[in-house]
Every structure is written in structure tokens, then in C-alpha cells.
Image (cartoon, rainbow, N blue to C red):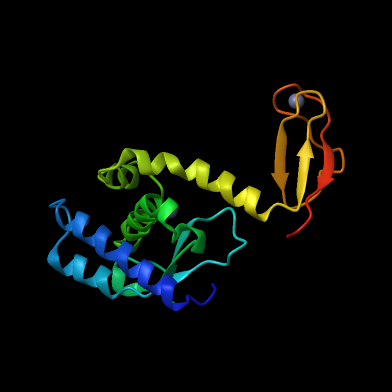
Length: 178
Ligand SMILES: [Zn+2]
Ligand SMILES: [Zn+2]
């Protein structure tokens, strides 16, 4: 976890308000649950995180969490808090709020609840966001010399990887940091 700055806190609160407003129109959640969601502390993940876009962290000592008051903090990726990604940020926040309401596993019920989110398009942005983070954090380009496809990575490939398209061995090209 990293510390959120003032602008990030403002953005997190905007996203939170939007998401809770939408959730209150779903007729699924009680006033009590929604007001408990309001109380959850929000933060940001480390900037160089690439695998996770959001996380719900439970309070210490809680082994079987069931409700929002047992959440220590929900962290979102700081790169989500920009105008470009704000729709996807809302989708991630909703996903974390469903966890916070006591649905821990990504099972069928969770997916059903998650799918109540009105914008289906936002969910599809997940892959694009992963790709965006990869490029942003990349120190190496693993490049296919036959089809020119590039695979941005944080570590060199050392000739261990093949192009997904044409199966040629990828070569490592360092990216100069700017
Ligand atoms: Zn999840
Ligand atoms: Zn190729």
C-alpha cells in the first residue's frame, strides 16, 4: 500500500460516491450496508503494481469476514484515478465493494452480483488497462524480428520466449527511461 495524495483522495471519493449512488439504485443492498460502505477507508496501490487493479484488505485478526466494517482499506491502482480510466475505476470499486459486503470468492454468485453494474463496457477495459500498465512500467521490449510484434515487460526475456503469433524467439531491447 502506498499513501494517497490529496488529489488521489478527492478522486477516490468521487468514484466512491458514484458507485454508492449506483448501488443504492440496485435494490439489492440495505441502507445499513450502503452506509457501511461509505465508511470504508480508501487508498492506492503501489504505482508499479501491474497484476492487481484493486484490493480489499481486511482488518487484522479477521478470519471470516462478512461485512464492510471488517475492511481495513480498499486500495485502487493510482493510474485508475485519471479521466481516461475513471469508468473502469468505478467498475473496480464496485467489484471491491461486492467483496467488502462479504462475497469473498470470485464464484457464480459473485459474478452475478458484479454484473449488476450497468456499464458492461467498463469491465472490458480491464485488459486494456493491464496492457497500458505493462507498457508504462516496461523496462524491456521483447521484440519479434519476423512479424515486428512487441511485448513490453519489466524483465528481459533472455531468449526464453516465443512470439505468440509466429513462434519466433523474441529478442530483448532495453527501453531507455525518460
Ligand atoms: Zn476480486
Ligand atoms: Zn512474430
